[in-house]
Length: 520
Image (cartoon, rainbow, N blue to C red):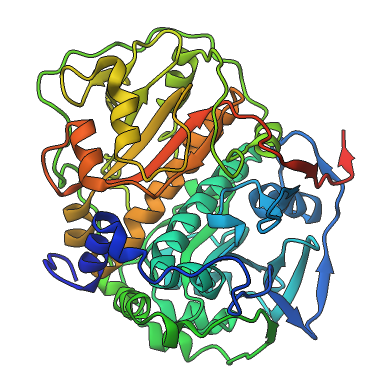
């Protein structure tokens, strides 16, 4: 699969990131759409395991993934954080992780020693899908060997949840959201003393069969085994014996649980999405690619003199508090004038890559995603466009040499009208290498780079939230215009995420936190 130059994934990349008008031409109204699914996926007639609502208000390290620890992990990793009521009232539910229009297209499944479950977020409960310990099967499907994980979490894309508005474009949104959630679960697990490995590569058939998923309607997107650090030292490594997906699937009895969800049939309504998704599926671990360090083109401008990162006393964040407060801003993103410590934000952004373990990260290297920071109003950093140097953590000047204070305006010009840019503190772009993704992972490359970017995007939003900033992920931009504003000269370097950072007002919203009964 490596070395593929053409494929449906590459073409979908071109359309969904380079030709926004075509990508959105089948978009439906979100008001009164008869294809609208239920807000949440609900299983009927399955045993339920309620989780305790008494969770700590601060995340601390645990020594066992017992029921209280599992409840805390799921609550902060995926749970519902608040309801919002505004004049439209169309997207009332919010998690601690951003979701396109708050439709929650990505589902969370949990594999424990005693069974396989779906996480029912609104009721904070686990729904039993099958009994037995299947954790080892999932590690085999991921092409690894070693100690058995404490648990394996699986994120799937229930496409109909998002496709009822966005049709084929839902593939981009669901893979982005899977990355955002993987990034959050990684942060929460780390704060609790657990280690997560992000697997974008796995043989799909046994994973789908294990959870009773339809590969067209709700494919698995990410597999996340969780270990305590002692187990990782015991040797979690890539298996040397290839595993056949069909052989692993043959060891599992089929299940067909009854589900209430509603919505359209994606395989019929979204032919392009279905084609791209099918092309990404893998049947044998022998086809898995190993990302190579230095195998991607460099987007940085040669010889640019940068701003070295000053020493800054950055306050430690209470992750649980920050996640409860994290916000994407009101329906119309309207910044309010404020002074934000730019050096503190810069310091936090320089740390967003640390500690992530993923099969998209080369040995001794990092995934080819660059962080660009366009500064509007931040204290300690002159207005302008910068690239965050991965090695030195310096800010290197980027974009046209004469941009300066007009850098934010340049980004506004290439963003579809909607957000207000006056008083914008900063805009972050995550720039991915298209050729690296597809040359390394074939048609699965689309989801790999989209999910890796989502992982970093969530960390950017958490870094901003630690300083009281809203982080609004915006896909409505012209990629070629963003390239020019950032000084990118090759089409392979593509802005995958655009994140607006600013302090915002309530915007007419009434916000009701969904607070558990907390353990102090």
